[in-house]
Length: 216
Image 1 (cartoon, rainbow, N blue to C red):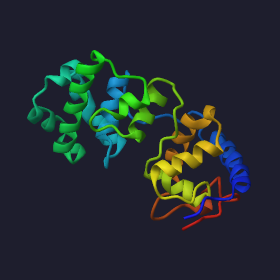
Image 2: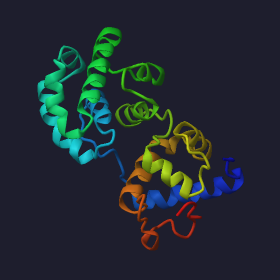
Image 3: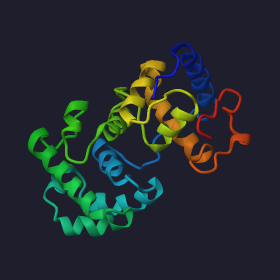
């Protein structure tokens, strides 16, 4: 697929940013957390699971394993039972233990605040790293591209790509770094509340006047 026209994309991006900022001025991550460790764990658990469900599971998990050092010494079966309702619990437990042990071994139990270090941890890809860096550390290293952001980027004509990293590249070119973190939060909220995958509420959408509705 070809890249969208740069000039048209830039104009649309500015309009999209303004409209989303007006609609969701306080948008933030909907996962409950108090520190980078908790956000990293919650983000890993959120794969193919709702944030609301993750938020019902993490209090008991964090009470039992309050930091990466504690989780590094956990029994996988116990972790599996604590996170079972999030789905794919065996794979997620394996990823959590691998992540925690790597953090304990290579980072003294502290979650690293760098993209390359985070993405070297088991179970942590660029999307998860962007969530942690942007939301827990306040570092704009990129744009979180989940299924909602990918869908909206295409429908809004902000990217003609299907690969998440290529979509992120396009968004990073269209929006200034100061907007990257908030942009991700706002697109996710809009995707959940209005621009759903199967039945987008175009008639009630604040972006209707500027949206080319690609693929809708």
